[in-house]
Image (cartoon, rainbow, N blue to C red; front, top):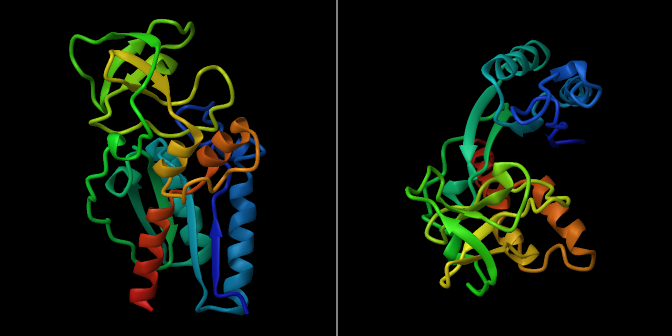
Length: 231
């Protein structure tokens, strides 16, 4: 009686940002558990639909997952979708499924469309040239890796949300007084396409974490529309 299974097995061991241990990492090995679950469902209902998601990764890993998923489940469709087509966040994700998924139309949503305000008092230094992705300045009051200092233009897109747990990892936006501020939990919800205050009721730390761990809602809506049209 199961018609649909969705899965997002842990990305840390597959991501280019991690140690890239693949299924040699116990978290990465949950890929095989995912295939077991999907195989069991399809055995009892061959018409069931399934959707599996993970981060953009090196070609070797992507081909490995596609190959073994095909061996276990038969015909497999794969697509890479950037959430930037539907939201103000650059977020590239692979989706594997047993139904066709096309690319969504670009809605042209920019960071300025989801911001609450452009008031800030934290110092930053403008870059001589804007880099790819709307990176226009660097915070000057933060020590650490260059990536956490990046400040983005409101006329561009936000970077991919992470779990943002400490260390100034929230995306940062350039404000009108040439200062910057970090994005608020509410704004991170909007980057994921959630209703305002969807994660309210817990600490800001947990709100950021939920947004970073979640799927981008408009992308999933698009995928399910593709599924329904095919059915």
